[in-house]
Length: 285
Image 1 (cartoon, rainbow, N blue to C red):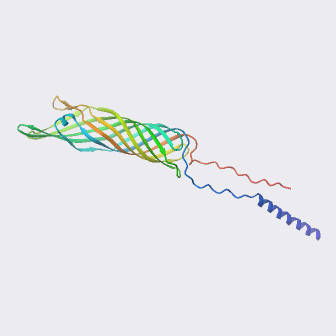
Image 2 (cartoon, rainbow, N blue to C red; image 1 turned 135 degrees about the horizontal axis):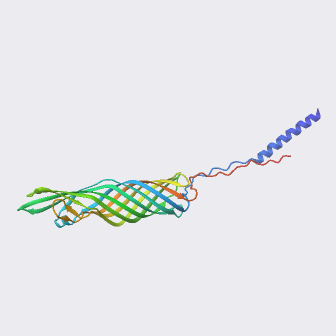
Image 3 (cartoon, one colour; image 1 turned 45 degrees about the vertical axis):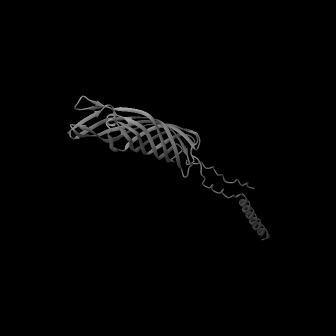
Protein backbone atom coordinates (compact mmCIF):
# COMPACT_ATOMS: atom_id res chain seq x y z
CA UNK A 1 0.00 0.00 0.00
CA UNK A 2 2.83 2.39 0.81
CA UNK A 3 4.36 1.75 -2.63
CA UNK A 4 1.07 2.70 -4.28
CA UNK A 5 0.95 5.91 -2.30
CA UNK A 6 4.51 6.64 -3.33
CA UNK A 7 3.70 6.11 -7.03
CA UNK A 8 0.60 8.35 -6.81
CA UNK A 9 2.56 11.10 -5.13
CA UNK A 10 5.29 10.87 -7.79
CA UNK A 11 2.69 11.09 -10.57
CA UNK A 12 1.08 14.18 -9.05
CA UNK A 13 4.46 15.86 -8.71
CA UNK A 14 5.22 15.07 -12.37
CA UNK A 15 1.92 16.63 -13.53
CA UNK A 16 2.59 19.77 -11.51
CA UNK A 17 6.11 20.06 -12.95
CA UNK A 18 4.81 19.57 -16.51
CA UNK A 19 2.16 22.28 -16.06
CA UNK A 20 4.76 24.67 -14.68
CA UNK A 21 7.07 24.00 -17.64
CA UNK A 22 4.22 24.60 -20.15
CA UNK A 23 3.34 27.85 -18.42
CA UNK A 24 6.92 28.99 -18.73
CA UNK A 25 6.96 28.17 -22.46
CA UNK A 26 3.67 29.95 -23.28
CA UNK A 27 3.85 33.54 -24.49
CA UNK A 28 1.31 36.26 -25.12
CA UNK A 29 0.69 37.34 -28.76
CA UNK A 30 2.12 40.76 -29.67
CA UNK A 31 -0.39 43.66 -29.52
CA UNK A 32 -1.78 44.83 -32.91
CA UNK A 33 -0.09 47.80 -34.51
CA UNK A 34 -2.13 51.01 -34.30
CA UNK A 35 -3.27 52.45 -37.67
CA UNK A 36 -0.83 55.04 -38.94
CA UNK A 37 -0.69 57.40 -41.89
CA UNK A 38 1.54 55.92 -44.57
CA UNK A 39 2.33 56.43 -48.23
CA UNK A 40 1.23 54.37 -51.20
CA UNK A 41 3.26 52.28 -53.62
CA UNK A 42 6.97 52.81 -54.00
CA UNK A 43 8.70 54.39 -56.99
CA UNK A 44 8.13 53.08 -60.50
CA UNK A 45 6.50 53.51 -63.91
CA UNK A 46 2.73 53.53 -64.36
CA UNK A 47 0.26 53.73 -67.24
CA UNK A 48 -3.01 55.64 -67.00
CA UNK A 49 -6.32 56.09 -68.80
CA UNK A 50 -9.09 58.64 -68.16
CA UNK A 51 -12.56 59.50 -69.38
CA UNK A 52 -14.81 62.35 -68.34
CA UNK A 53 -17.14 65.21 -69.11
CA UNK A 54 -16.35 68.92 -69.16
CA UNK A 55 -18.53 72.01 -68.75
CA UNK A 56 -16.89 74.09 -71.45
CA UNK A 57 -17.26 77.82 -72.10
CA UNK A 58 -15.80 80.59 -74.26
CA UNK A 59 -14.67 83.85 -72.66
CA UNK A 60 -15.46 86.06 -75.65
CA UNK A 61 -15.89 86.10 -79.43
CA UNK A 62 -14.52 88.41 -82.05
CA UNK A 63 -14.76 88.79 -85.83
CA UNK A 64 -12.97 91.41 -87.89
CA UNK A 65 -15.93 92.88 -89.79
CA UNK A 66 -18.12 93.03 -86.69
CA UNK A 67 -15.40 94.82 -84.73
CA UNK A 68 -14.81 97.29 -87.61
CA UNK A 69 -18.53 98.16 -87.66
CA UNK A 70 -18.69 98.60 -83.87
CA UNK A 71 -20.94 95.58 -83.59
CA UNK A 72 -21.63 93.68 -80.39
CA UNK A 73 -21.65 89.99 -79.53
CA UNK A 74 -24.24 88.57 -77.14
CA UNK A 75 -26.06 85.38 -76.23
CA UNK A 76 -23.15 82.96 -75.93
CA UNK A 77 -24.03 79.28 -75.74
CA UNK A 78 -22.07 76.06 -75.36
CA UNK A 79 -22.62 72.40 -74.59
CA UNK A 80 -20.78 69.88 -72.44
CA UNK A 81 -17.86 68.06 -73.99
CA UNK A 82 -16.67 64.50 -73.53
CA UNK A 83 -13.04 63.46 -73.43
CA UNK A 84 -10.79 60.41 -73.20
CA UNK A 85 -7.05 60.24 -72.69
CA UNK A 86 -4.05 58.01 -72.03
CA UNK A 87 -0.69 58.65 -70.44
CA UNK A 88 2.49 57.30 -68.89
CA UNK A 89 4.04 58.43 -65.62
CA UNK A 90 6.65 57.83 -62.97
CA UNK A 91 6.36 57.87 -59.20
CA UNK A 92 9.49 59.14 -57.48
CA UNK A 93 8.42 58.30 -53.92
CA UNK A 94 5.31 57.88 -51.79
CA UNK A 95 4.34 61.53 -52.21
CA UNK A 96 5.50 62.78 -55.63
CA UNK A 97 4.68 61.62 -59.17
CA UNK A 98 4.63 63.01 -62.69
CA UNK A 99 2.97 61.92 -65.94
CA UNK A 100 2.43 62.98 -69.51
CA UNK A 101 -1.06 62.68 -71.01
CA UNK A 102 -2.67 63.00 -74.42
CA UNK A 103 -6.45 63.40 -74.70
CA UNK A 104 -9.13 64.04 -77.29
CA UNK A 105 -12.05 66.31 -76.48
CA UNK A 106 -15.11 66.31 -78.73
CA UNK A 107 -18.89 66.57 -79.09
CA UNK A 108 -18.84 70.18 -77.91
CA UNK A 109 -21.02 72.83 -79.57
CA UNK A 110 -20.56 76.59 -79.42
CA UNK A 111 -22.73 79.50 -80.51
CA UNK A 112 -23.07 83.27 -80.29
CA UNK A 113 -25.09 86.14 -81.77
CA UNK A 114 -24.00 89.55 -82.99
CA UNK A 115 -25.68 92.78 -84.10
CA UNK A 116 -24.38 95.52 -86.37
CA UNK A 117 -26.23 98.81 -86.94
CA UNK A 118 -25.45 100.80 -90.09
CA UNK A 119 -26.92 103.56 -92.24
CA UNK A 120 -28.81 102.48 -95.37
CA UNK A 121 -31.37 104.18 -97.66
CA UNK A 122 -31.56 107.22 -95.43
CA UNK A 123 -32.31 105.18 -92.35
CA UNK A 124 -30.77 102.68 -89.95
CA UNK A 125 -30.59 98.99 -90.77
CA UNK A 126 -29.63 96.17 -88.45
CA UNK A 127 -27.80 93.00 -89.33
CA UNK A 128 -28.05 90.19 -86.80
CA UNK A 129 -26.07 86.96 -87.15
CA UNK A 130 -26.33 83.66 -85.34
CA UNK A 131 -23.17 81.53 -85.40
CA UNK A 132 -23.20 77.83 -84.56
CA UNK A 133 -20.38 75.33 -84.81
CA UNK A 134 -18.56 72.38 -83.26
CA UNK A 135 -15.45 72.61 -81.10
CA UNK A 136 -12.97 69.76 -80.56
CA UNK A 137 -9.46 69.69 -79.11
CA UNK A 138 -6.32 67.59 -78.79
CA UNK A 139 -4.54 68.33 -75.53
CA UNK A 140 -1.06 67.22 -74.42
CA UNK A 141 -0.15 67.96 -70.78
CA UNK A 142 2.81 67.36 -68.48
CA UNK A 143 1.37 66.94 -64.98
CA UNK A 144 2.80 66.89 -61.46
CA UNK A 145 0.98 65.54 -58.39
CA UNK A 146 1.46 65.56 -54.64
CA UNK A 147 -0.16 62.60 -52.88
CA UNK A 148 -1.29 63.59 -49.39
CA UNK A 149 -0.96 60.23 -47.65
CA UNK A 150 -3.17 57.16 -47.51
CA UNK A 151 -6.06 56.32 -45.19
CA UNK A 152 -7.78 52.95 -45.67
CA UNK A 153 -6.43 52.69 -49.24
CA UNK A 154 -7.75 56.20 -50.15
CA UNK A 155 -5.13 58.72 -51.28
CA UNK A 156 -6.18 62.36 -51.87
CA UNK A 157 -4.00 64.36 -54.23
CA UNK A 158 -3.52 67.81 -55.74
CA UNK A 159 -1.77 68.62 -59.01
CA UNK A 160 -1.08 71.00 -61.86
CA UNK A 161 -0.25 70.62 -65.53
CA UNK A 162 1.03 72.61 -68.48
CA UNK A 163 1.16 71.74 -72.15
CA UNK A 164 -0.31 72.40 -75.57
CA UNK A 165 -3.84 72.40 -77.02
CA UNK A 166 -4.87 72.29 -80.66
CA UNK A 167 -8.46 73.55 -80.91
CA UNK A 168 -10.57 73.01 -84.03
CA UNK A 169 -13.87 74.64 -85.05
CA UNK A 170 -15.83 72.73 -87.71
CA UNK A 171 -19.27 73.02 -89.32
CA UNK A 172 -19.68 76.73 -88.54
CA UNK A 173 -22.80 78.36 -90.00
CA UNK A 174 -23.74 82.03 -90.00
CA UNK A 175 -27.46 82.75 -90.32
CA UNK A 176 -28.09 86.48 -90.79
CA UNK A 177 -31.24 88.61 -90.73
CA UNK A 178 -31.52 92.18 -92.12
CA UNK A 179 -34.13 94.45 -90.59
CA UNK A 180 -34.99 98.14 -90.49
CA UNK A 181 -34.82 100.03 -93.79
CA UNK A 182 -33.56 96.84 -95.40
CA UNK A 183 -35.06 93.41 -95.18
CA UNK A 184 -33.96 89.92 -96.02
CA UNK A 185 -31.76 87.12 -94.79
CA UNK A 186 -28.31 85.78 -95.45
CA UNK A 187 -26.46 82.54 -94.94
CA UNK A 188 -22.79 81.89 -94.51
CA UNK A 189 -20.64 78.87 -93.81
CA UNK A 190 -17.01 78.37 -92.87
CA UNK A 191 -14.43 75.70 -93.45
CA UNK A 192 -12.59 74.06 -90.59
CA UNK A 193 -10.09 76.15 -88.69
CA UNK A 194 -7.46 75.22 -86.10
CA UNK A 195 -5.40 77.15 -83.62
CA UNK A 196 -2.72 75.83 -81.24
CA UNK A 197 -1.62 77.49 -78.00
CA UNK A 198 -0.49 76.88 -74.45
CA UNK A 199 -2.86 74.97 -72.16
CA UNK A 200 -2.70 74.60 -68.38
CA UNK A 201 -4.62 72.80 -65.66
CA UNK A 202 -5.22 72.61 -61.90
CA UNK A 203 -6.62 69.43 -60.39
CA UNK A 204 -7.59 67.62 -57.20
CA UNK A 205 -9.06 64.21 -56.46
CA UNK A 206 -8.70 60.91 -54.67
CA UNK A 207 -7.30 57.52 -55.65
CA UNK A 208 -8.36 54.09 -54.35
CA UNK A 209 -5.79 51.31 -54.36
CA UNK A 210 -7.60 48.16 -55.44
CA UNK A 211 -4.48 45.99 -55.29
CA UNK A 212 -0.72 46.26 -55.66
CA UNK A 213 -1.00 47.28 -59.34
CA UNK A 214 -4.40 48.91 -59.90
CA UNK A 215 -5.43 52.34 -58.60
CA UNK A 216 -8.79 53.91 -59.46
CA UNK A 217 -9.22 57.71 -59.47
CA UNK A 218 -12.00 60.28 -59.45
CA UNK A 219 -11.17 63.96 -59.65
CA UNK A 220 -11.91 67.53 -60.65
CA UNK A 221 -9.83 69.57 -63.11
CA UNK A 222 -9.88 73.16 -64.27
CA UNK A 223 -8.47 73.26 -67.82
CA UNK A 224 -7.63 76.39 -69.83
CA UNK A 225 -7.45 75.63 -73.56
CA UNK A 226 -6.58 79.05 -74.98
CA UNK A 227 -8.17 80.22 -78.26
CA UNK A 228 -9.78 78.74 -81.38
CA UNK A 229 -10.98 80.02 -84.75
CA UNK A 230 -12.99 78.89 -87.75
CA UNK A 231 -12.01 79.09 -91.38
CA UNK A 232 -13.02 82.12 -93.44
CA UNK A 233 -16.79 82.64 -93.67
CA UNK A 234 -18.24 82.34 -97.19
CA UNK A 235 -21.52 84.05 -98.15
CA UNK A 236 -23.82 81.44 -99.68
CA UNK A 237 -25.59 83.94 -101.98
CA UNK A 238 -22.80 86.26 -103.05
CA UNK A 239 -19.17 85.82 -103.97
CA UNK A 240 -18.02 87.32 -100.71
CA UNK A 241 -16.10 85.93 -97.78
CA UNK A 242 -15.33 87.32 -94.38
CA UNK A 243 -12.77 86.93 -91.62
CA UNK A 244 -12.94 83.85 -89.34
CA UNK A 245 -14.92 83.83 -86.14
CA UNK A 246 -12.52 83.68 -83.18
CA UNK A 247 -13.29 82.14 -79.80
CA UNK A 248 -10.99 83.34 -77.01
CA UNK A 249 -10.23 82.18 -73.48
CA UNK A 250 -11.78 78.72 -73.74
CA UNK A 251 -11.87 76.85 -70.44
CA UNK A 252 -13.56 73.83 -68.94
CA UNK A 253 -14.54 72.44 -65.54
CA UNK A 254 -13.94 68.70 -65.85
CA UNK A 255 -15.07 65.70 -63.83
CA UNK A 256 -13.05 62.63 -64.72
CA UNK A 257 -12.58 59.03 -63.66
CA UNK A 258 -9.53 56.99 -64.46
CA UNK A 259 -7.19 54.18 -63.59
CA UNK A 260 -3.46 53.76 -63.05
CA UNK A 261 -1.63 50.50 -63.68
CA UNK A 262 1.45 50.55 -61.47
CA UNK A 263 4.66 48.65 -62.15
CA UNK A 264 5.95 48.96 -58.60
CA UNK A 265 6.27 47.08 -55.32
CA UNK A 266 3.21 45.99 -53.34
CA UNK A 267 1.32 48.85 -51.79
CA UNK A 268 0.17 49.46 -48.27
CA UNK A 269 -3.28 48.09 -49.05
CA UNK A 270 -2.20 44.83 -50.64
CA UNK A 271 -2.21 41.46 -48.87
CA UNK A 272 0.46 41.17 -46.21
CA UNK A 273 2.17 37.82 -45.69
CA UNK A 274 1.95 36.87 -42.02
CA UNK A 275 4.92 35.16 -40.33
CA UNK A 276 4.44 31.45 -39.65
CA UNK A 277 4.09 30.66 -35.96
CA UNK A 278 5.65 27.42 -34.83
CA UNK A 279 4.61 25.52 -31.70
CA UNK A 280 7.19 25.58 -28.92
CA UNK A 281 9.39 22.51 -28.74
CA UNK A 282 9.08 20.69 -25.41
CA UNK A 283 11.89 18.35 -24.54
CA UNK A 284 10.66 15.04 -23.29
CA UNK A 285 12.50 13.19 -20.56
